[in-house]
Image (tube, rainbow, N blue to C red; front, side):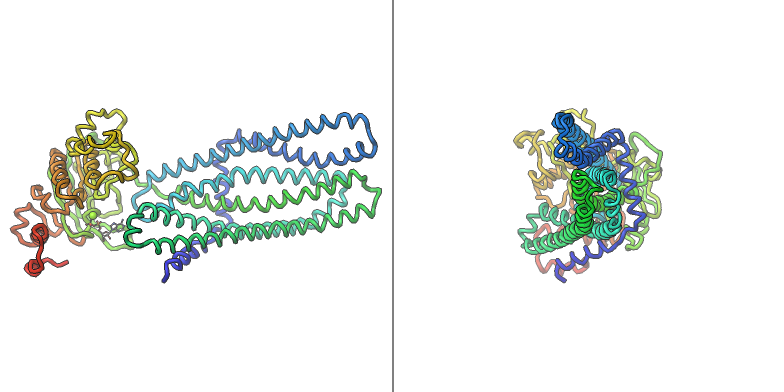
Length: 612
Ligand code: ADP
Ligand code: MG
């Protein structure tokens, strides 16, 4: 199947799910809950809005005295007051519309800020599982795109709804005060207008939701194309990415056009309906002269013409509100996701570092295969345990249970004989320093990256000492601004080895009692590996260390080596013991030893025992 078809199909499936009316109502109520917090501003804004709508309706009505008293009767007193009345009316109108625009928009921006804060807070508390399953694009588009939709629905559209409905009410009062007979014609067609509006709004909502889903995918593909530009170019993936992106953009444009078409069709239909009454009014007023003055006629006609625009706007505003509701659904869905379970009470300043796995079985999801089988492991305080095995065996999974990145496992994991689930999450994670293969660096200075997560009161001397231990000082000194050098997004301005050394320095500074090194030396040249090995040795001293090693030469001195294969611990022992045993570990070891000494084809044949 071609990629664009795949994307389109997935999108179509996404947008099929229909949200029932009561959910829409609930969502809207929840949006209003955010608005309610700023009720003072909100009320000022609403008063301004109503005032400005009333003034506009009053101006239509003023045509009647203007014509009857001014042009026809030449009432001197009225004429001399007229300029002042015009000035006063427009001054008031300007003031009212400022109140309306300023205060309601301010409520809208506050809602945006609040939602962004809540989303971000939530992101800090969501379990690893959520991140495994969602794309960055999805999350980012909620934070950026959906939030603005909600603001539009809660602020600008609200101004419009209030303004236009009061304007309509005002105009109706004007109309009825002049001639109730002509005006009641209006009510004959009102149902048709309502039907058109509600039909178009339900369509609008559906298209809006599709559009929104599309935005998430769009962001995702763009994000991948940006962060993965090197892979894309070297592997010639440009065409593929372009296809994906173009088909999405095309898809989005189609959705947008559907939205626009529905929108644009709805207003002329409404106008057409209204034009029918206007035609009748003109005819009736002229044929039954005497019941209505010239000014009254001008006024009622002006009101009827004026009422079209707010009616049209109100049908339009639905579109904005619908989009807002859809946007809010996405946000609330995220905000309602369960957070990491944090019910433990136990805290301790510094654990001794006794780590125990008791009969642990784990699958990432109920439906997925079991990744860890019957894991039993005991690590004494200050011991170093190396975990080795083929990739995909479950090594990373095994260590990631310890800081409770996942906690839906069976069995027990204990630190200092306390179940990890009994610790508070914060205190538990306080006990670990984690260095993994994928070093996370922030677009900040070298010093801030090393001192990451520490309170600001870390001295430069401490940072320097940590950098020295991790053999990072050598290259930091050569950076243009030393410790104050900004290292770019993800540390792109540094080499792999340098990044890894910064990560180690961060771990040194944290000085946690338990250290987890997950392939911290993979993919490094031998020189930096030498440095890092030395750094690691220093780091491992005096703390419990779980080290997952790709290169077995780095772990020969470990107190205990465990071999994990297909989620099971198949061997435990020291380097010497396991070599003597001549099974899994020995095979792995000899394999690598040969690799190092330039593997020849006949060597592969000579070690048939190692199957891949
Ligand atoms: P190792 O670190 O030994 O290479 P992992 O622990 O990363 O192995 O992976 C063990 C198994 O768990 C693999 O089959 C892998 O596909 C699966 N796995 C790893 N991470 C996840 C995840 N986040 N969600 C689902 N399955 C995963
Ligand atoms: Mg791994």
